[in-house]
Length: 112
Image 1 (cartoon, one colour):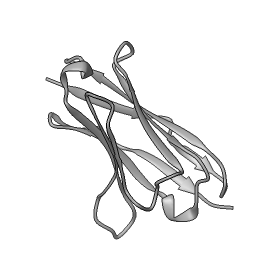
Image 2 (tube, one colour):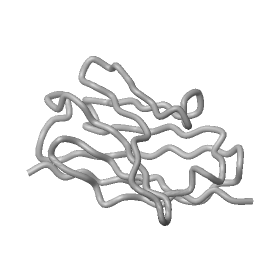
Image 3 (cartoon, one colour):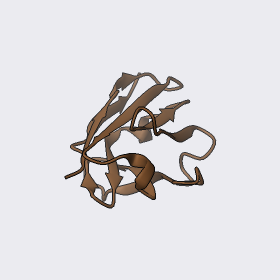
């Protein structure tokens, strides 16, 4: 059974940065083709933020392109989301995803 545990959420001011981590257990992420981050804001549907595949190819939502960077560290069995120039509209619960399921989510709040 694959478990995904997110960390690194919190509060930031507009223009600030946070780095989210998704630690996987139960399977090596080097054998998981695609992993990603999604987010869900209050009253809205869950939406894709970014995906990364086993070759390191990335896909980003238009709203985060140029600000967020997804990466994976196979040795640490962890996927990261570096979020720069955060804006209030980035406020949401951020979920780690793989074909084996979802993490529990971590809250990100951006406000002045």
